Length: 374
Image (cartoon, rainbow, N blue to C red):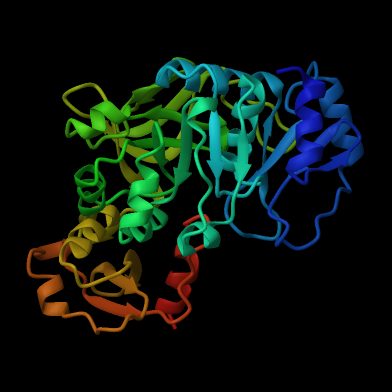
């Protein structure tokens, strides 16, 4: 994609803010941004051969996010690898994610680069049954969902019938628990569990739908444009042409971008993501992965949603706390923990009335921890 073409797309459908040669893409719900460093940004751009002019906000919901620097080269590499991995010549997408989110941005870029059709659609409309018809004459269609969105659609037979019309349904933005994946397979949905982030222009590893329907539950293999490595501690590193140019006004020079995520390889050489390195709970000297406890609690059927965090404790160092939103039926906690023992068994349960999950499925763990400490 040419730079001018990408800039035109950003102006037309992404709500990007321009400052000199730089474009800034962020959630409009953030506090009004200031561009006091625009002159410095322009100088940095001039010294980097035009790399990294597109700044995409990342790092949560703080008033001052970090800016991951991309450009037409990183995004084009991501599109090419995506199309090759899934054997797509033309990408038609129904898109329920906002343009400021990397998945929403890349849905628009993929469609524009391949001459496909992009349909921005309201998630509330889809959930309510107002869903666009998929014109098969235009080619194959794709859709990106977060796990909680998939969970809600699986309840409706009409929604499931509509989902079967997609060649690929990407599920990312958070861990997919085993029961949800199995329900998707039982419904014969062509799901792709994927892994990626703002810094990598969305997915760098993805399970092909055929592999998913055959029983695989990993994040699949690396896309052609990406290389994935694990260090001795299991930390995930990513290299390739779609990796961002750096944060803010700094260019990265390392060959590998080391994330804060932990992973391992399965027997097929595919990536399994274990969770965030900084989310590991150390209780009584034992390391606990919140994602594994969450999966067990969900499997009990007692929670519509659940998040596990670590809270400081004078005796144990940290204790495992399970947070959950209110529902029509109070959970049977004894049943919920029946399969959990020792360090992984939560010592506290906390019902949170104002559940801090964003429209794109991200949970604010820092907010949950703040409430748990009160």
